[in-house]
Length: 117
Image (cartoon, rainbow, N blue to C red; front, side):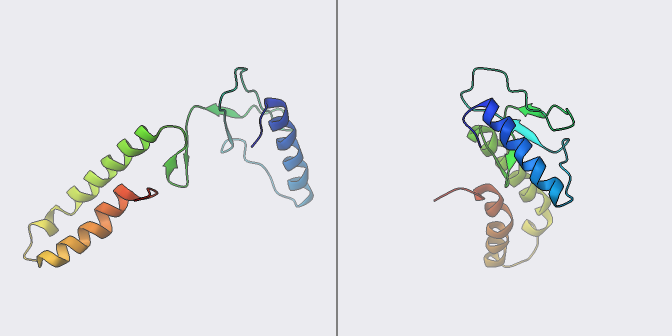
């Protein structure tokens, strides 16, 4: 994290220098840049000149960073899909308590993941 593009560039180059000492490689295709409240266009490059992709929003640890609305919308979609995938269970002769436990474990957990209640 950095408060300017120049500092972010210097930090990336420093990380690349340290990783070379250990024999590790930076995967520029998987490395992305996201900016907050920076007017200038971010252009961060690796040591070999590859320009890193600048994204408006991306998923980190299962949640979207910038857009809470997008995160909630995606969670609702996945929850509905999980609910629909269990359609046979809902119409089975399974006891109601077991159906509720399955719902809480498979559908509700998807919807509420990462939220504080």
